Length: 409
View (cartoon, rainbow, N blue to C red):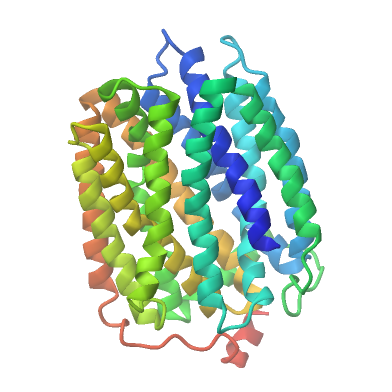
């Protein structure tokens, strides 16, 4: 049920993303809103709120019923998504406000969903379950982007926004059908201390070195993620397309995200934490190298293939680091660790999207791709170097080390 709810919600989200970017681009013609700036602004609005709500979302997921949190967030997201119907040329700000509201609520949904996973499956099933959710995100990105681009081209953008709102309602209903415990072990509904509770979780992460490096894996990866926003510039400027062309390139991103975790699993990267750490570093090298060539691709089909190859690395990094955190974090800290992880990558990705838009505006898309590709490669090399001494270590069983856990309680 958790997986099915993700399929519906993510499919609706990506179904509308192309329409959102296209609508704001059209409304902003003749203004300073270039295609790359619009895409970057939309993606920043998707990511940054998660950073801001972390001190509340993480402790909330560790103290209250995670299923109820997911239901409430989905219902409110449905109402917020309808605001995409309202923007005009003079009220473009409504579109950005709507995206901020949807993303803020996602900042509560995601830690609760991620923390629930290990409660709903056995320890042996967790690698496959985490990979399934990771590939689902990529599959819905690909299918949703393609379907949304076609749908908005044929029938207009407003029906896509309505479908997105309906998807949140359906996801909330599906979540009500989840059977099993989602509340954290030993959860106590006492007064939350947002900053102190989050600090406790981060101090706990420092007692487990592999967990500590996994926590910062996505944050470093996000420093180069602004290249995704530059795909809009390629679609509209270099290839002269619209919603359909952008949907194709975003679909290539989804294809890579689907295949990356599968390839990593076949290579045995999920068996030991050392393999996860190594795969996270190597993934950044693949991501940066392929996007470097995307920036120089003269043909749309070649840009599509290279984007898919880049996200073989991106999908592997995201899914394996998420699984590593879930498998190596005690249940009572899982919501806060997951929220902190989401916050770090949200902040770094937001900064990267802004940087990408500024570089594109000043120097052009090719230079922007080159700079950020080098950032990704540099981070991958640094991460591999930093984790050299611990890749041979085994992360402690999260159910052990009871005295340490009691101290943090």
